[in-house]
Image 1 (tube, helix red, strand yellow):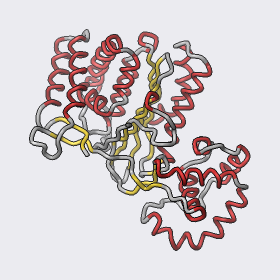
Image 2 (cartoon, helix red, strand yellow):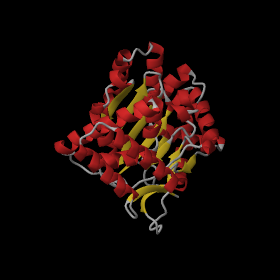
Image 3 (cartoon, one colour):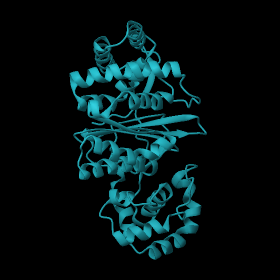
Image 4 (cartoon, rainbow, N blue to C red):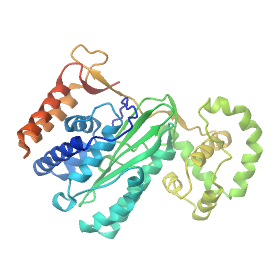
Length: 370
């Protein structure tokens, strides 16, 4: 089963100091090369897609475990430290404008690795759909600002991306992995790390299947017919909007992108993934179609936040929560072996091992808890 988790990831501004970044790059490169050599490329990707290991890895590199920056800095450091032609692993994207360069980087690095055009197209599609799902299909109030896409020369891939909620000064991290993915629109995540927001429009939930199908049926209709339905329903919608969404409806359902639905009508999407992948189908259109699907067809979407666990400081006394020891111990042991085997200076190695031992200490290591 895919795992989801939450962490208090407060937004921290500013930049990691150059002296720290230099050391992080050296350490990240040493650990990565050893792990790829010992365990293989696919296992290294699998570890990065695991929230336990990713969090521990960021801590070992020297970053605060609970900061939103552990995501952006760790992936940026890896991108600089891991040479695709040396390792067979390409790291694309990043924070802000770098995230918008991901698709071009997939093409560039895919060519360097000798990947076929068809496989590159599939990688680009995975990157685009991962971002689209976490922007529009799960609406928890977090806007994506970081997208990191990592792939191997064999075509396996993972996504580590993050959204922010400026009002709450918090972040939410999304983990994807090709080896555990069976659908882009049905509970596709390897993990979701963030604060449980309670009621969240979740079109990826299994219980949203009827609403997904109804949304596709609506999108196949002539847009003029759907527009008439919206006009007819507008007064009842205004009266019942609070009952349906409480204070969470930030856009009205009649703020649908009609040009996008014109494209949907012309292309006749076969399923929800095709509908969601269309240009212009964003949060307001997804939410509007979900509401109309419930009012017309009686097919309600899920309001279940996919987050189910919390990262917390845990220790032997279980305060405030017990640590899931097996997973953390496994992550720590693999990191320890990689550090001890890496070609690092004594000072770097001792610093990394000290930080790793601090993760093991009571009351000072993060764990996934119910």
